[in-house]
Amino acid sequence: SVRGDTSVPPATRHMELTYTAVLLRLVLVARAIAAGAALYELRVVLPLWFPVSNGKQSVDAEAMRRCDSGKRFWVYVSIVPLTLFTVLSMKPAWQLAISGRSSAWLLATVLTLIERVMTYGYFIPTALTMMRTSGSPPSPKLVVARARWWMRLNWLRCALMVAAFVTTIEALVASSPSG
Image (tube, rainbow, N blue to C red; front, side, top):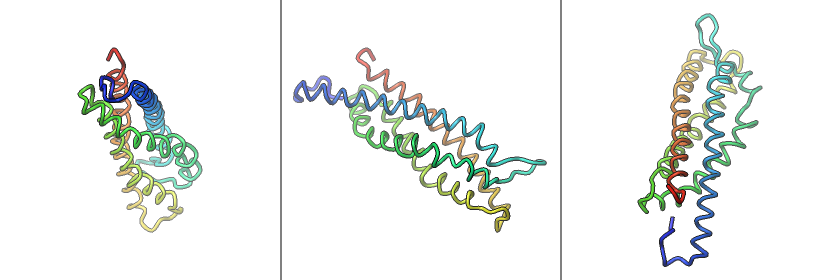
């Protein structure tokens, strides 16, 4: 931020600080909701989508379609708001980092960008493909292998979300007047 910069008029400094402070808090809330929801989905929803019966993993495409958490939940929590706030965070996070005050917000933004790329590039397309799988897919072994890989990578995605959330808390503390 530009707190000590005398080349910026005081009124502009106040507006920028207010915008930055509000944005950081919105980012924190979005990341908290997304991380909590991802952990919930990992523990509660995914076992319904990928049940294990008699020691064999399967993909319940019908359960995925019934739940459809992407359209019913994630679009309102993560796909639109978290992505938007992450993109809007890039400039203020960079400015805070190069000012020497804290690089936490920038790190949280990078972690979230990695998670967003994984989500858009792999998780959403793969989930949609598995949802389209009928009762007897062309290669059940391939579908199950894809589901196992999806679940393993989902642990990494959840870890990135939680790390970004915790790092955003650190950024908020660092950006406070007493931080």
